[in-house]
Image (cartoon, rainbow, N blue to C red; front, side, top):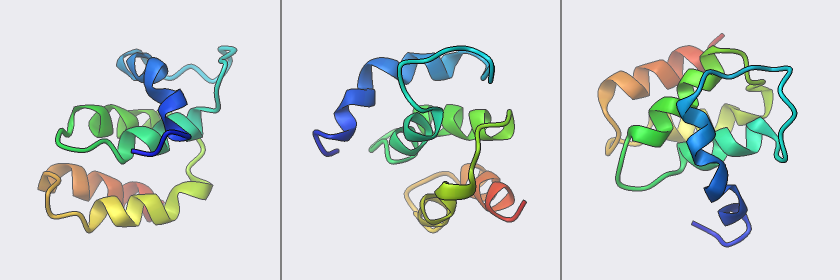
Length: 89
């Protein structure tokens, strides 16, 4: 992970709560979701990030990230299918 996106690391735990669009945050939820989708070695954070997308985080700028996630054979099939479904909405 690059150091520029490491600024999102302290906010990963926010993904463990439901996404509420009216909450003021010190970050862009899209940036947090993108950071979590790229999390190496575990599907935990990416699964929560997909949940936020399903709950309403704007995904317009995440098409390429979702496609890359969908094509990553190291990810579980269930998560890759969720990413595909979100990308095709």
